[in-house]
Image (cartoon, rainbow over all chains, first blue to last red; front, side, top):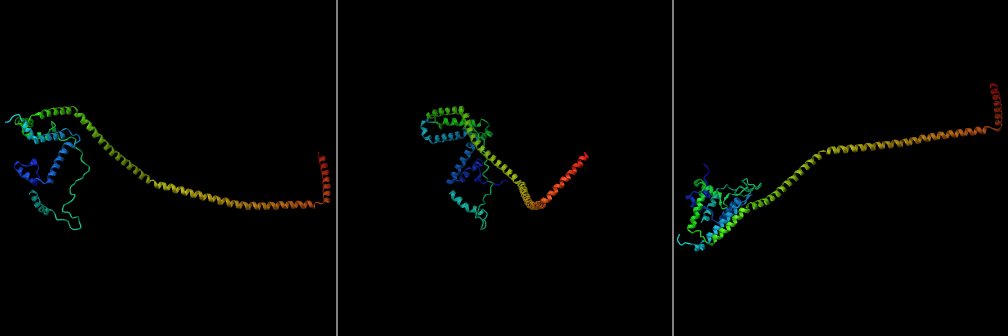
Length: 88
Length: 252
């Protein structure tokens, strides 16, 4: 029987749906922890899509699409007024 | 609150570690350098990045949905999501939509037309950098190889020094021999000269004595021949001659 992995150390994709709340609570929310998480995420994305021999379009286009989506979400309260119908 | 939890857990965790090593050794409570980490050689870069479909959605998403929904699943999801956003006006169609459509159209046209050329150009630049680095490496390797060969040759040359010394020894022996013989010859010549001198001296002395004696004898004989004796001898000679001539006439 393999040694039981602590809930703290499981990856997000292996966490069961019921344990999600506990798992989220156990994460490291100190500034150092958040910085570490950001750094990890950046490194993963960089090494997967950009730091390769023949990088393609997907690497930056995904970043741009994410930026577009985020800026749309932030300015939604302003765009709300351009809606064509009142009731949906 | 969470940090307090961590702080309370820390001493228990520390107590669980092995006790520190005795005095005189480095005071650590952690074993150092236990992993096989090494920074060289660096693994090479992967050839291609992660697959992205339509430039926007990573391939993993499609693979994630494939077992449950097959090939069209993500596309159905996308269409449904789009229709939901449009109908609920979570995505509002306004002037920005028209601008975005035009811009995206132009961008996509440009990428489709010039993408391959730009990629080839970038690859060429990369290849040049790599080629120069590789050239430097192979050059330095070649230089070192040559240095190794030279060194081996020098070692081989150094082995022959015994022959060199033998030749030198022979030379010196020959010089010594020649010098010795030269001096021997000189000695011989000198001695011969001295002996010749002695011999010549003796010869000269004897010759002088002889000459002197002969001269003296001649002188004394000539002195002893008085005029009286001269006349008598001449008369005797004439008589002898006459007798001889007579006998000669008789013979004829």
